[in-house]
Image 1 (cartoon, rainbow, N blue to C red):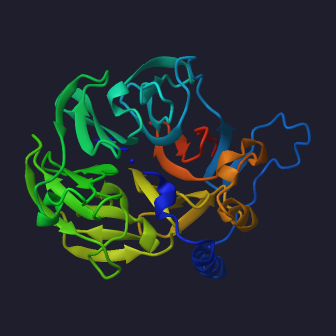
Image 2: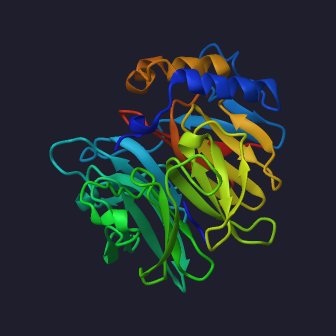
Length: 359
């Protein structure tokens, strides 16, 4: 099983709040691994990030975008069994553009589709069911979740939930951000930009139950933005990016709170390969965790750079200020079969980075 995750600025905490969180982390178990290859004066070598067995060669601006696509904020990424990379972006162009763009492993354009999701592009995940793979799409503008073929043919679409009762109020926003897959063939939908509930559906899209709501206490969330089925210890559970609460929150498959992981800053989405959990963090870094959810390394992390990124969020619209080997606002990230990492960022021009594993 393979899974991958309006404006995020609505949910960004103040710089002061972040610096307090990040400062405490740095003082504890966190540290800023150096960017290797920094002495390449001519800039001919891609920078390396990470350390020990987790070093990656970084290529920013990966993928040859066709002329008919003008990147908006690149929100989601997933990889299918054939190694094709699917990017979901949110364009602000007046004329609808395809929201999903597909590349091969070398970054060559393959196809695009999904004009109906224009302006709402967000989460995208791929799942194999029997002998066929399907995309699961989250649309924050139109308030829908859709299941499609790998070329965009719609299997079903699900709109606004009927429960809890407050969804019956037209003023209550419903804005699904990402999906996690259940072992029984069903799936979970996070209303990350709406009422902060998580909804469980059957495999054919029928509602089963829900939990959550806005709050800071255990079981409550503020922006359940991305989710993932975590089976690394043998017991399936749902890991949720409880983003505005600066934590990951774990739940049983029936929605009971299990625990927290606090060594994150502003987590956006999750991917897992083997024993390694990958968390894209909107606060300028990508983090790898081991099986015990201990930090292995923060890829691209530097506190001074993070301070610049969070100072009014101006840099997200200033590509000329971006530094090689640094991230601005990672919104999603996923592994391919070879252990390489693709990162998509919430920046005005869109950006895809490929992190090629070198150790």
